[in-house]
Image (spheres, rainbow, N blue to C red):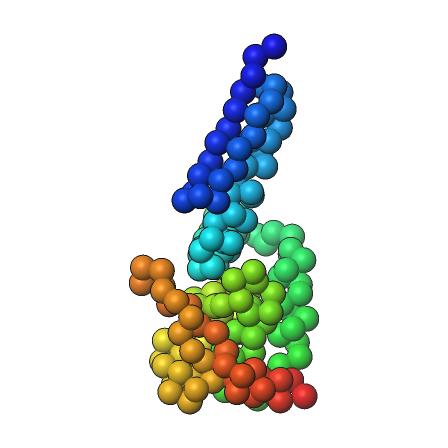
Length: 170
């Protein structure tokens, strides 16, 4: 019986699988998910990037098909969260509430302006210029920069920003 082996490093996150070819074939199907999970643990911004890419692919798929796809559980979770927003809400407050949702529900506990806007767009809502809102929220000390990946900037809510978001939800 032939023995097969997989070895992935991703800068010492290391994954090593050995066994029969049949066993390895089964593990290969799970490998992309495992690598994404490992990458997000090693690089907090990677999961946000991967998530926004998969949402963009789903959105492109919807446009190409001309119809809508079945709503995922994470989409319906955000819809429930979004339904709690006050009726009259500034764009900054909408960004803070959506940022809080992402901070609580994602592994990296951070968000980007585009990840916030992608979720809001799915609800028929949109921030006209997330960069301007984020700059103002940083000045107001409700949000801080948590890191950068290329041109993408990741943010987290400060304690004051979290308090403000929770007061908006009641």
